[in-house]
Image (cartoon, rainbow, N blue to C red; front, side, top):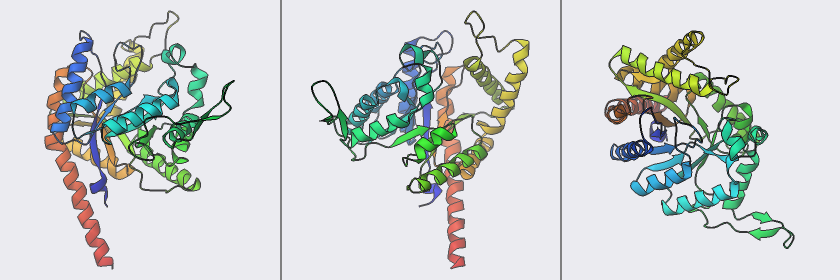
Length: 362
């Protein structure tokens, strides 16, 4: 098998709500993107989980994944991510096994911890629990799928528990761990689990994380290769450099608001104030230099660079712009029709060239 054979393309459905849009409109567009992605032959859909924000309204990745699997027939649906510290891991294991069963094996469980925001104080166990990370929860999920869970109470001492239903696949559905630090890379690698890497990582940074994962996996007695690590890119096909700049400037402002420090009043400080303009322009330029945004040739080149350099074979594209949500479907269609076939053709050509070189070497 070659990288060309292994590569998978999908979209991340962010359930982003721009000003003036209703919740119903956001979910209508989310379903439209999902069904269009399947019709266009993409491999994966990924859905997110966020709480208590005005801009992103998908509060249950597992519920939305279940709904989208009911509206599609072939495409794989994954969570990117289920915020594991906000849920009991045994309950997550049960729900994932249920989705594995009813979908006929089309479900992928991506887990992570997100950011230490209000949701951890309201429905979680506080920021300290967020810092603890997902390691113990990962073990509990896998134990539940294997039927190896026990419980103790005043009446029963370590009584055996068998979560139901059993997953369709004996070891459970594929599970990915969102990784952004050495600690989370270790959590994934020591359990032989692949990683989810997000847009803030350059292709070189992803390559370093994959190399560290391989080293740690081997040290833990797992295979050091063969992991279909996944990564996220912003993707927008446009023939206008000015349009590409505006799209990434909108994204930079959105990211700045999401990460902005709070003032004494509890309000996020304005990223559009003069002191924030330089930061926004810097982030804009970095996004323009790394993301699959621009004309077809630029998008193809960027995607190939990330795949070749990192060795990751599963790509998530965020095709929804921060503003002008009506652009998402045309953008997805251009991506599927003009960009992804060229990416695959390049990878297949490289595989043939490599195969010829190996034959000559023999």
